[in-house]
Length: 150
Ligand SMILES: [Zn+2]
Image 1 (cartoon, rainbow, N blue to C red):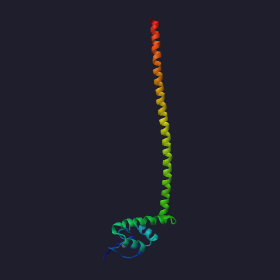
Image 2 (tube, rainbow, N blue to C red):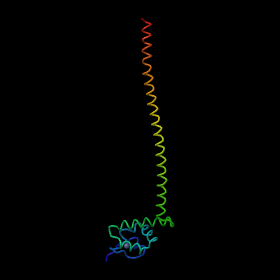
Image 3 (tube, rainbow, N blue to C red):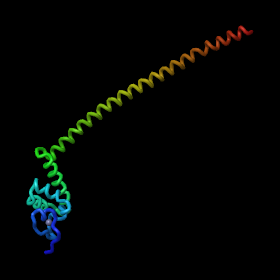
């Protein structure tokens, strides 16, 4: 069996990293934090077992998920990733409230705008009516003036 420079897991355990090392593709020695985090929360044995039980094409996602949860647990030992979910759910509630308030404001200003345009239309109608009403008067005055001229 050939081996190479150890991956982060094998380096951590001070052992040779063989070509078929299950950790090697996901825990390069160049990024030791990845293995340190999952090892601290799950333990290397559990991580190894989970990788063995997972189809090869899903192992990368498995490692990324464990890493995400491990980092969240290290940062927030009480709530872990649930703390992140709770914060995001709260942000969604706040954002939905803000959207509802903005929609109300938009509806309010839209209603005011419609009201203003109705008033303007009405004003325009009344002006038209006044104008229509004045036409006979003007014509009658014109008639009168014409009468005076004659
Ligand atoms: Zn290894």
